Image 1: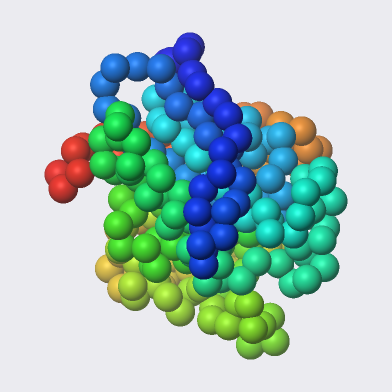
Image 2: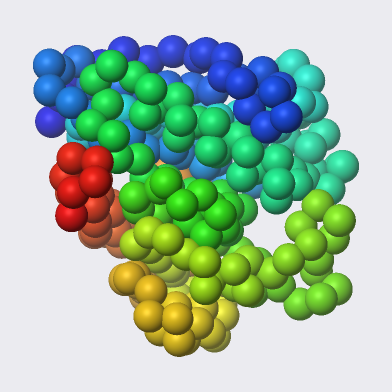
Length: 252
């Protein structure tokens, strides 16, 4: 564990050359470190998302959480998130561009080991699955209860034109999925279908499902928090990252 860390809000160049805010945290240590992009949930770039970023730094990862709603103006995170949702949310192309930029920022740091993963929650879980298929340079992806990975035609839009599940054939890195069996988005049947698709294409993945937990069961500031299940699932996340992010770039 790394008691010392540096954390700050910075600007990075995101999709289409737009400068967006991002929250970063990194451990103070001499050795090279892997990186993780934290993809915030639909409620926004909130205190809990930044807490997750610091948690990763405490465990030895350089982490960055890009503010995917930055373009909707200044103000409280929840007001900005409401403005983004009122306009249909973030387009998939923009999300991929911003997340790719955040990953590139991590790789460019002098203490980077060259390997970068992502972790996303809720809508961010959907985006984590998506970028695992769209950004070939990623080394690992964690989807925490990503909703609408499987999307019916009426759920698609100009901003989200393709069902993420249909991108599975292009997945280029190992995937970890964390789900609550009481969740309704995704519900257990959708998780089963997603797993079937991953198996169909021979992808490297592992899914963990928790009884007594629903949506957002990691979020310590929400009634949905389930400490027993969250502690176990975080252990699964860090074991997955140790396996896939600690070898040098180009290694196994």
